Image (cartoon, rainbow, N blue to C red; front, side, top):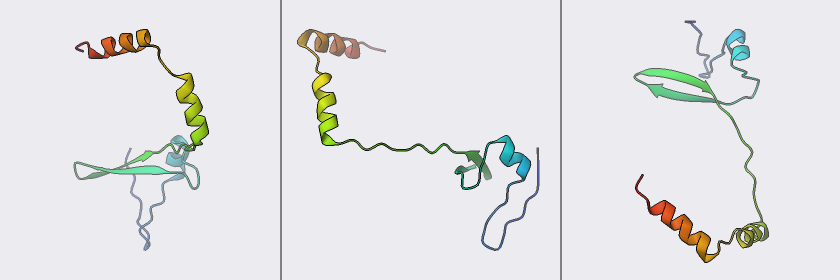
Length: 83
C-alpha cells in the first residue's frame, strides 16, 4: 500500500484514518520512527508504566529469594555448562 501525505509547516504528518484504525493508533498514541536503508519506517509503540519499588520491598524480595548452598551450587553448575 502506498499513499502520499503532506508534511505541515510544523513538520507534522497526518496519517490517514484507515491506517490509524488498522494499527490501533489513537490520539496521543506513541509511534517509533526508524530509518532503514534511506527509508522512514513508522511502527506503533507500546508504552508501559514503570513501577517504582521502595527499598523495603526490595529487601523483602531479597530475603525471600535466598538460596541455600545446595541450590546455589546447582544453579552455578547449570550456568557454567557450555551452551
